[in-house]
View 1 (cartoon, rainbow, N blue to C red):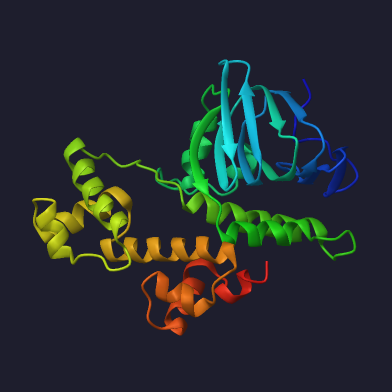
View 2 (view 1 turned 135 degrees about the vertical axis):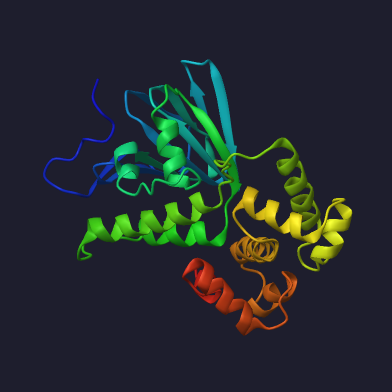
Length: 301
């Protein structure tokens, strides 16, 4: 059975047309992506391999379904979402919906590519996913995330890599890594030993902040609502989510801003105010410090 990832011979970057409006691009051994837009008929892509891979399915229009013939189950990724899956043995079909609105990007990442970036920390997304792939998994959905402006920004840059660009392969791989870093950073991973009581307490605090992160209650007020004290709340929240309560509020605000930037119908100042920042400059600096790009750059894509 031929490996999905070793189809490059004379070049590190190879584009292949699978069907009309469906392209496969091998960036290097270990990274492959499919791009599909506006299909006049449903297309089915079969995967029968023994490759350990993470699959990211980003659907910006219509929907994609993946049928796992080993476990006899089906997963659907709908418009506006990114599905993250793990698979260590494949007998599956990926169905692309017939639709003028179809806009799909599917990234396949081999475990040996992830292995380059292992940190030895269980709570790191790369380590977590790599260890998942060492198990006998035909297809497991890890998480479903909303598409944001930074996802679109990275993919658009990747798709605009030209055959005339210098260092084409490494340029494309850089954009892929940018996409991976942002998407994987949104995963919720619990690797540390956490008691049921600690998880319940942290989850209650998280739910309170999710209800209103624009004008959130004080830590004292959250502790009161969770029937605990401030010190214990801060300690347990950091243990469970690897972030402070204040840091989590900022994370929620910037993630919401990232989603609003995708819509492109608001100015940077309006978005800043909508997510709880009075000053556009302060918001832009925080956004850049978190994502490595200023929000105004995302409005161009």
